[in-house]
Length: 554
Image 1 (tube, rainbow, N blue to C red):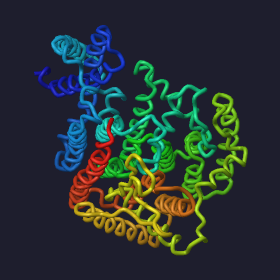
Image 2 (image 1 turned 180 degrees about the vertical axis):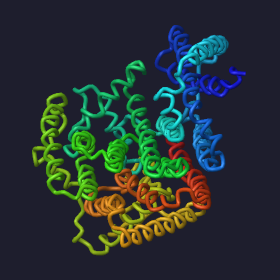
Image 3 (image 1 turned 60 degrees about the vertical axis):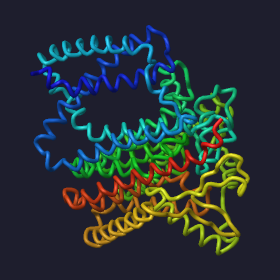
C-alpha cells in the first residue's frame, strides 16, 4: 500500500527526468552521460515530488472546496505548457521537438535504467521513512510552496521553448520583436570579453550581475552560453511568478488568491514576451518584486534592502528610483531614504569601476557624458502638441491594457524599412502615433480588464479616505506607475519593451485592492475564467508572430 501512495511521485519523477534528459542530451551526447543522467534525475525528481506532495496533498484534502479554484488555476499552467508545445509543433521549420526528447536509439536502455532508478528511489524512501524527514523544514516548505512553484515552472518551460524558436544571434534581428535587443544581450551575456559590444551606462552593473549565472548554467550545458542565457531569462520569468505568489500568500494567507494573481502576472503579455526575448527587464522586475516583498514583510533594515536595491540599480538605473519611491511611502523618513541612496551609490561606484576593468566595452555610469548619451532615445514633447497627446494616449493604453492583454500588433516590413517582419504596438504616422488594436476575444478581455482595474482603483480611493495608513504600499505602486508614465513620455521606443518595469506594480496594485475579497468564490471564479481566456488570447499573439516569420525561415 505504501508503494501505491508513491505512484504520483514516481510517475512525475520519471516524466520530468525524460524531458530533462532529452534536453541535456543536446549538450552531453555520450553514452556515459546518458546512463548517469537517467539514474540521477529519476532519483532526484522522484524525491522532490515526494517531498512536495507530502505536504500538498494532505492540505488539499483538508480544504478541497476552498482550494478547488486553485487546483483549476494550476491545471491551466499544465495546459499552457501543452498548448505552447502544440503550437510550436506546427512550425517544424522554426522549432524541433527533438531538442526536448531523448534519442530514440536509447529508449530501451532508458526504460531499463528508469525501472532500476525508481526501484532504488523506493528503497531510499523506505529508509527515509524510518526518520522524520517528512517533518523537516525543507519538506514542509516544498509542500507549502508547490502552488507557487508550479505556475513558475510552467512559465519557465514554455517561454524557454518559445525562445528557441524566436531568438536569433545575428544583430539584424534586433528591434524586430517590439524593439527588443536579444542579439545584443546575447552578446553581453554570452560572448568572450574581447568580442563584446559596448554596454550603455544606464545598465551600470548588468555584466557583473548577469554574466556569472550564465557562465554557471553553461557548465551544465557543455559550455553553451547561448542556451544558458536563454535559460536564465526564462528562469527569472518563473522567479517573478513565484515572488508574486509569495507576496500575496504572505499578505493574505489565501492560496487561491495568491495563485490567481501570480498566474495573472505570468500570463500577461509583458511577462511572456520579456521572458522569451532576452533583455534586462525581466531581471529588473524580479529585483523590484524582491524589494517590495522585503518592505511588506516588515524586514526593512537597510542591510537587507540595499543589496536588492543595488541589483535594481545595477540592472537599470531608472528602476532604482522605483525602490526609492516604495521605501519613501513605507518608511516616510528622509534620513532613511538618503542613507539608502548613499550606501547604494557608494557600493555601485567601485563595482562599476570593476566592471569597466573586466569588460572595457562597458561605459561607467559615474562619467556624465555616458548617461547623457541616453538623450538619443528622448522625445521633445513641446515639438508638436498633437504628437504629445497621441503619445500620452498610446502610453496609457500600453500601461493599462497592452501589458496584460495582448493586442493585435502591427506587422511591418518595407513600411518602416524592415527586411524581416517587425512587430510593434505603436507606429509613428503623419506626426502622431497609431497604436495596436483589439478584435474578437482580445477586445472583450481588454474591456473586462479595464473595468476590473477601474473597480480596483475605486477600492483604493475608498480605502485611502477611510484609512490612509493602510494604503501606503498600493500608493507606492500607483506612484511607480505614474513615474513610468512620465519617464516614457520622454524616453523610449515601443512601450511594450519596457513593460515589466510597471506590469509588476499594476498586478500587485490590482491584487492588493481585492485582497479583502480573497475568499470570495464569485470573484475567484471570475478571475479564473478571465485567466483562461487571457491564456488563449496571449498564446494567439505568438501564433501570429510564428505565422509572420515562417516565410522568412532559412
